[in-house]
Image (cartoon, rainbow over all chains, first blue to last red):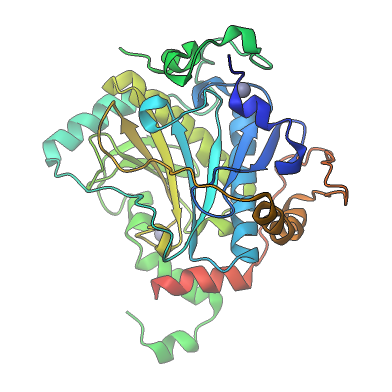
Length: 172
Length: 196
Ligand SMILES: [Zn+2]
Ligand SMILES: [Zn+2]
């Protein structure tokens, strides 16, 4: 039985480096690179679409400032700001988070992608499909229910069996 | 393109103007160059990446030219994240994908390819082999403490956060989306220098 790992992190004061009423920034104790910071809404939202706009906005602002702070205090070449939205995107804790971590020349991360060739016709088709589905900011319906914290007895087994993670894999 | 000598004699405003003139993404924002637009509002535009990681890869751009993220004011970064939420939602609905990666490469060494700040939203499906996963390395409590000591003063500077000596966290009054377009000469030189 495990409670939500990110709800647990929010209790680890020794790792918290910033918090206000809505969000907290936490030093990762399993970092991708040194000084990896995880920014979390205090309320338990599984994915981006569940978080209200004011929280999404706050996450962006805090991520930018933390990224800047990392720049200023460490001798690094850049930062990555990343949201893994859904298990297929590598999200392994069912609690929305923004990762901010520094990049250095020898960090051995392989982040990036090979580019694909897509024809102009196909791009036009995709653009038409996607643009019809993009809702103006402020009108994206809030998905699913939201809980303050997920109690341990509501989550069974390991991450693979976690109902919240399964819920992430919403198939059409 | 201006020569180095010409650049030296330019005012910051002229340099900014020149950067805009040479920026393909500024041209896209101004509709001077055609693009596959999926969303547009007063301050932002979202277009399909023509060299995508996968079909439906979207770039979200502020219309204003910012080279790197620290230059983007709070109100705008907040807005761009909200657009990312809309776009991620739209990708799930329209393409039937199962997730999305929201990604910002800040600085050339982090993989930033163009000197115009942008957010990538990349549609994801199971086993798509796009290498965007994060390793989990170990770190000692002592190292964490060292990082905290380095970061804390700068975080306090930007977010007004006080860390008590006992290490106990103290919440501060919420700072609601204040615009702090601080001139961070050091970082900007460091980061933008990579594009020269
Ligand atoms: Zn949680
Ligand atoms: Zn530009």
